[in-house]
Image 1 (cartoon, rainbow, N blue to C red):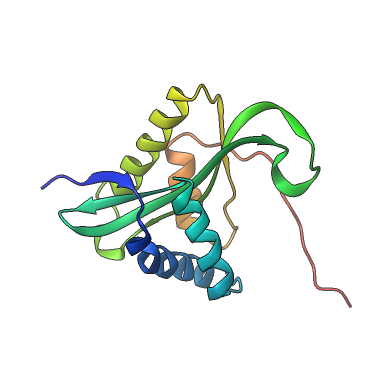
Image 2 (spheres, helix red, strand yellow):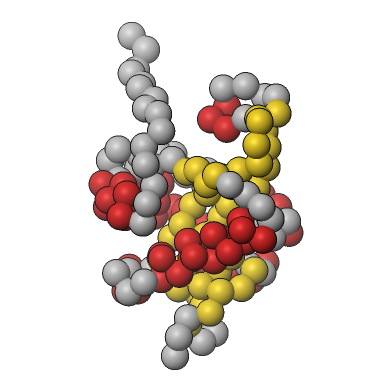
Length: 152
């Protein structure tokens, strides 16, 4: 049975949150359940989350938004073009390396083409080497680096 992709429903929220929790663990980031649950509810309502299904089982999801506000939080004004920002793409461990992630990206590409979006962006934490390799393999190129250090 080939996977299908549909808009997320509220019943998918725990699946989405568990995937985000796993991503945050890889990235050594802090996962605040109540904050992410509220954001996920809004994203589901606005049709910004798509779910890959195998039968009636969710096996992956993408979370993205199309807009024209300046990316990266560097400015809060309008950017010169409409773009798609991908927040998360997640596939269950048992379904990785089977084309599900690529299928989710193809779905995003179709949506972007239909909405006349010319640029797709995302961020990948340097500790998430598998994600960086995957994104480079499907055609993404690094754009900028953000450096950080703890305050002393």
